[in-house]
Image 1 (cartoon, rainbow, N blue to C red):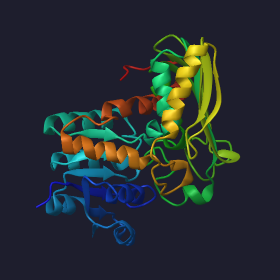
Image 2 (cartoon, helix red, strand yellow):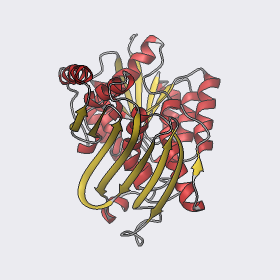
Image 3 (cartoon, rainbow, N blue to C red):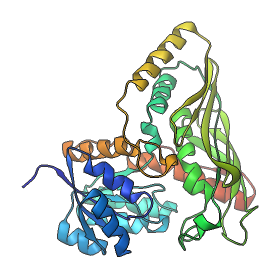
Length: 355
C-alpha cells in the first residue's frame, strides 16, 4: 500500500510523454499507467517513463483505478474522456483546450461538481518564473492602470504537421487551428496578467493552407477588457519564423513584453517610479533563483509542465484547489471561441462571463 497519488496519463502522442516524465519525477506521485489507442505509443511511453501500458482507457480506469489522470488526447475527445475519468473517481488535469465548445466545458464542470472530483486545466506558462513575477508586479500595481495589452504568435505549421493526424486543422477534431492550439497559451497569459476579456471583434482566414486544412492559419482580433482597457490578438501559423510568441502590457506606470513559449524571457521592461522599479527587480531576482524544471518535449512547451503537474499532484494529495482550476482555464478558450464567432458574424461578440 502506498500513500502516493496513483497517476495515469491518457494519450501518449506529443505532450503525453511530457506529463508522464513529470509524474515519474514527482515525489508524491506514482505513475501507474499510460494509455493510448495506438499500442506502440503506449509501449514507448511506458518504456521511457514507467507505468503499465494500456490501450483502452475505460478498461484502464476500471482495472487500475487511478487517483488522478492527465488527459492528453486530441481536442475533440477532451470533454468525453474527462467526464468518464471524473465519473470513475479520478481527479483530472486536462491539456488545453479544455474542450472545443462551451457545451463541452459545461459538462466537464458539472461532472466534476457532481462527482466531487477536481478538474484542472493545463496552461503551463503561468508557472514560468518571469511570467509569475510579472503577475505579482501587476497585482501590486507596479505598472499602474492598464492601457493596452496583447498576445501575438508567429510560427510555422505546414502540411506535414497537419497531415500527422486526421483531427488536425478541422473544426470537428481540433476546433480550429492556430488560435485554439498555438495562440491560446499567449492568450491565457495575456488575460491572466491584464484581466478578463469583455468583448472581441475578430477576423480569421486561411491564406497558405487551403488545400491542407479547413480552419484558420491566420487570425487577429481587437479586444476590450473588463477593466476598460483595449488590446489585440495576432496569430499566424504560416510565418517564416519557427516559433515567436509574446505578450505585451502597457500601463500608466510602466510596460513590459515577455515571451510565452520556449525561453522564459523578459524582452522589454520599463517602470517609471523608482520605488516600483526596485520592487520589480526584487521579483525578477526571486524568479531567477527558482529551481529550474527539466525540459521535455517540444521547445515551445518550455519547462513548466513539471511545475504545474507538481502543483496538481500536491492539490490532490493535500485536498486543496490546484493553481489553475477548470474554471480558470476556461476563459482563454472562451476568448478563442468568441473570435471564431465574431469572424463568422462580422461583428463584435460579448463574452458571457469571466473567471
